Length: 487
Image (cartoon, rainbow, N blue to C red):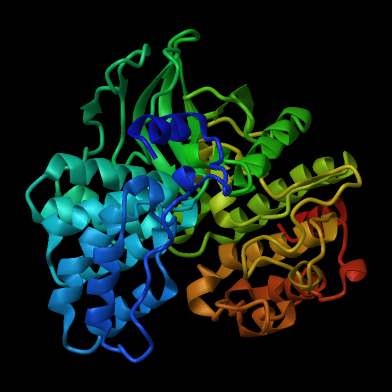
């Protein structure tokens, strides 16, 4: 075949005719005879038989991978590490080969040689496979002194999995941005420079309307920032979703989060965090990640409050009533939350209270419900069986959808925490779906002797809230009325 015919075939993708001798491709490189069972001989023979790039196989023979593995684990790693990179360059479309060689070079601390195979494997990897490769690339560049490249790969890794082991520590140790430290956007992005907080999940920007001031929290789906709305000249909470969530078929978290936004918009209530704006959707092709602009609650979360110990009895009862009355309105509109826990309960911190509260409690303002990502609206079930262990009722642990009785169960657990402190540490709420810790067991282990004359009626009500039979739990409004009688 002439060089022109070969070039035209590569460009046009046309098939070569099998009946034309001049257009036939060379056969795949032959492996040694079965008698030649030396893995090094096999690799050398295979390398010598590889022909022109256009005629090479897309994947190496399985025997080649087995030979490399045998050498690496039999005290003959050096020839495997010497031949491996050559094979990776010769067959640039084989992910398994590139991954094996790259990992082996990293284990041998030959970081400079590992960078090429790692980059080649990353180009062929799926989203889930790319996590470890990004971490190894960052480690390899860090080892050879290229901290700029190491930071770039770690930022990309944190965009995919903000909790990846050691990634946050590595990012900070090599000079990642600190809280309040400004960082400019990437060149060529026609957006205003924004301030970024510690551990941004990716080198991302928001539209010029918002200026990021500080990070409030970060999780699997995104990062929440305290931000300035330049148009309205007010501060708000901006939830910026991780860019990788937009990849179809990879994660339903973005779909769930935007479902949350629709619920927040439909379920307006003083006891629910206010939603101001939604920018982007799960199918948008925009380079900017989707975001939610929400009310900024400056009083912190109930979880942060519980870390200081149990609440005073009068405060715990009033906060539970406040929560139940908000839920009663939601349930009347056929909306259930599905994931109630202290992390999702926020204090507005503006000193305004819709409910009667002790004077010392009033600066925290109302306790509002946030994070509706597992909610149910109308009669359609969403994400059955998901939620936070320790706050899921029995029917939810068995795969049931969010429901008003399940929300009431979660309130019972939260009320116990407010009375006793963090139950997750104190009474062993580390449970599993296979062996759930029942509500009655939680109640039995909780110490309520400090309640005095309130102990018996409150234990009775908590027993009803935490019963495993959903139909026997009182409605949110009825439970609030009974708690009011105990003030």
